[in-house]
Image 1: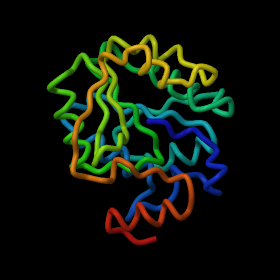
Image 2 (image 1 turned 135 degrees about the vertical axis):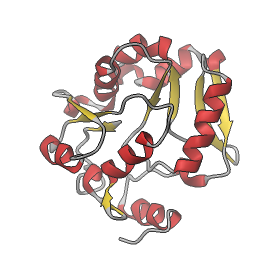
Image 3 (image 1 turned 120 degrees about the vertical axis):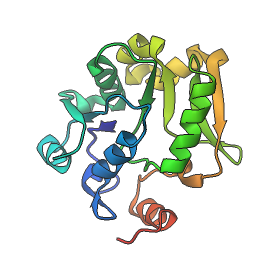
Image 4 (image 1 turned 30 degrees about the vertical axis):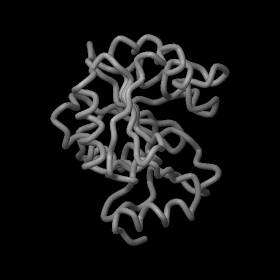
Length: 194
């Protein structure tokens, strides 16, 4: 999970915003940890790392600090891929500011189980969303991404023949908390209050 950015457009650290009764980063980790298929949750920290780590107290997640977080999102993707323990069948790449919905995530995992050697992304009403699951054999490529080549998008382009959609009825896969208005929309979509 990428949770290292400065959240400049948002105005405060997005991992630490309230999401129901917990921080957003804690919600994300809880949602991931509830999936049987998830063997390990790695949270990449950067800006205000100590506070993000503190928000995860008592949760099953390992943090890794990205000292280069100010140089772009791809540095956190590379950091995450390099920090994974052992072999993995798939890599679920999650951004902290794209709130996970358990049922939508279940649809994505079902799609991945049907094609574990492919890159699987959610599809809602003709629009692609997030997160994306990469097959484990692409871990090395993810660990080598940079922003100059558009990060993980470059990996997807190189392996376009392996790209698969996992249909979902949940529009939550399209949410991205770039602004305060988007945050309010996402809270409403999840039935939460500020």
